[in-house]
Length: 218
Image (cartoon, rainbow, N blue to C red; front, side):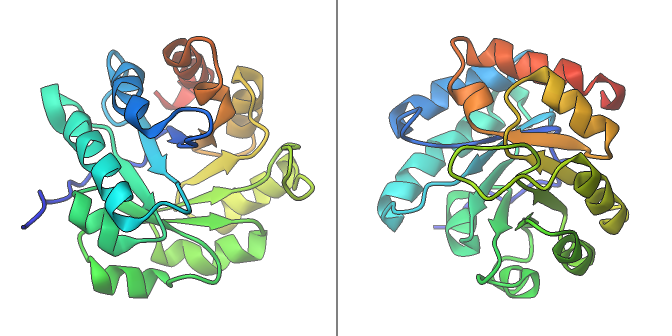
């Protein structure tokens, strides 16, 4: 079966990273709809990052998310961790790569129509991959439980410069609007978050507050 074609969607200002320990897969579709309804089209995206899922499970979770992201006039890009083949099969908009996995060129060879993101942790890494990708997440900017020591805001600013025109999204320890504002002031186009939205009492309100903190870009 041929999946629906990927669209030329913008890089989101707020990229919400999935975590099924916080939001079970069956609950993702209604949650995602609440996040994207009522905000500027393309400003919120989803990074489907669920290691350990069987391919069939992942595909069955992704397909309704893609339908929701494209229904009712919505523009809400969905990116899939590391698997351009799975992203293509589900009709998602892009793939996010990591060090040690496929290169951007290899991912584009599998599915040329997909947008390509990359998870970077060092400024030199950003400089190396930026010309070949559509966006980069840079982490951890702030202290984040279970992660390596934070790189800090000055490193984020350096990553933004190293990326040239490639958007850099700050990731790691962004717990609310204040961290989002600081990231924006230090050159990030936007932010990528997990608990700041998925762990909030009102995820849609939390997402809107983060977008408001990025208001100079909206």
